[in-house]
Length: 345
Image 1 (cartoon, helix red, strand yellow):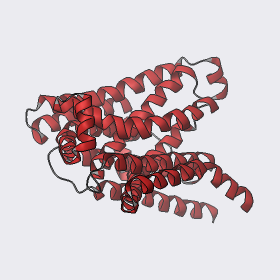
Image 2 (cartoon, one colour; image 1 turned 60 degrees about the vertical axis):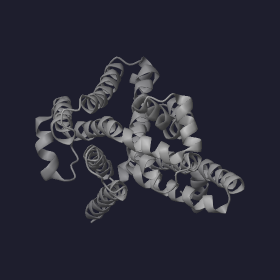
Image 3 (cartoon, helix red, strand yellow; image 1 turned 135 degrees about the vertical axis):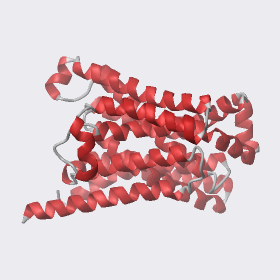
Image 4 (spheres, helix red, strand yellow; image 1 turned 30 degrees about the horizontal axis):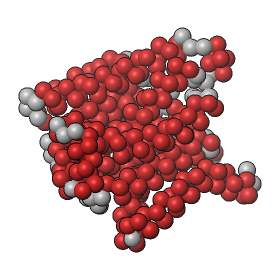
């Protein structure tokens, strides 16, 4: 690819996110003043940092989609991520856990942001139980399957030796729920149930997806790309994955600003760039070139799951989530480069 073609490709991938970000920042500047721009930028960086490994997983799944479903993910999926997950979902969670009506919660968010932040923090243990178990199973499912490529063999070999990913996942559900119920929040049925629901959501989506892919359409069998109901199941899985990643970012955002509109703007900008990074990884074949990147992403997911579950009982500094993810991703890229250099010799 020539230099001009590369620049054009980058513009195509990041152009929409860049334009939307500039327009959003301009609107924030006009409506809330120059002092509101910096918190929005900080929140965008937080979102990208928290969700980079999400982009890696997204690109892996997206490579299995046909063109139609790739377009759905990059259009409807963006709308769900920006408005549904980062703006509406926190309102629903606060409403469900506090007993307030949606109109009351919206009023709190707009007129009493400190109380809204307090309500969201109160709801966090339930959110963390659901999201933590869901993310834990993603990591366990990946490492529970025998793979030709291993990164940290000492860690991965024992799990892969069994080659029973579903067995590892089910054991992970019961193990995580037991830890929640007996150690993190002793005898709290609500939080244990939230953990079970997170496990059930993962199992149902993956089982349906597996069945649909096994009995897929002729088009799917001929092309190797997901279509129809199988693609829909994977699309739902990606949206749940995005929601699980966003929980920590939404809660951490209140350390930057209490203004819900600014939080939605900042996290929304970050979500747009995460989608662009996903597209970049897909089109440049990054996962093929960096052979351990997908492993690093799953280690990052496991670390986030542990942090979220621990956060049910203990206060974990927000920067830990993004830092752990970046450490694993960076180490995986470094190991991949070293492997490529050895192969070239």
